[in-house]
Length: 275
Ligand code: C2E
Ligand code: CA
Ligand code: CA
Image 1 (cartoon, rainbow, N blue to C red):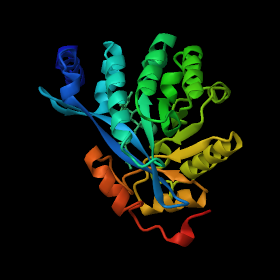
Image 2 (cartoon, rainbow, N blue to C red; image 1 turned 135 degrees about the horizontal axis):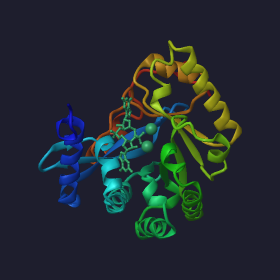
Image 3 (cartoon, helix red, strand yellow; image 1 turned 90 degrees about the vertical axis):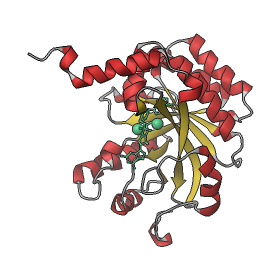
């Protein structure tokens, strides 16, 4: 019989948990940045900061593995505040028309006190909050809508944008979700994969884009990998996109070069970009 001690997934989780208990956040964690492209101007308008953990014991561990464990063991707030401070410091050097998106965990929005801590970090930075978007994932929000709502309102009062991440993946109550004061939605990659060949994905993204327009919410489509996917999104009137087709997440030292050289990689012809 297979016991937990023989289950490779559980063994891995337990190793990650042990390593996180002894982690040196400053030394082992870093950020990479993925550009967000405006298809109308063909320019980069923002970068999303994504956490990377290079563990001294385990090597590189992806965020989908360490974030849930950091949340469970109560490390996430320390991690989020450290990374947010770092991201704001890096972004302070960017040209003023470039925004920063930062992912928050639901635990960062779970109490007024923690939300105030986030607010203080933003206020103490040299970065204009109007250039900052905080991203919160749909699945996380529904665990405590009322508390998250307070935090979102607080962030909005400061002038930040607040984006609903992974929209459409959580089977949440649409009316409840849309009653929150989001300024943007991000359509998950799950709906983009093969959108050019899959009529169901196409219709879902079409509806989500129409919904975001009706709600006057900016809409960003993530995970665009192929030219065919991009063309399908253009035909739906999408403006903001992110994905490997344009760029993989990059280190901060590569950002200036990226902005200088290449506001949009790929070869979307001018005529095909819907205005
Ligand atoms: P997310 O916020 O939805 O971020 C997008 C993920 O998709 C990133 O994975 C990114 O590298 C990946 N991605 C971007 N373009 C493409 C593409 O064209 N194809 C494919 N296959 N993937 C693409 P990553 O960096 O592994 O992050 C995974 C998730 O971990 C993030 O999903 C986010 O929910 C969470 N995360 C990452 N950094 C942080 C952080 O600093 N704080 C918190 N709380 N969560 C974070
Ligand atoms: Ca995100
Ligand atoms: Ca997402």
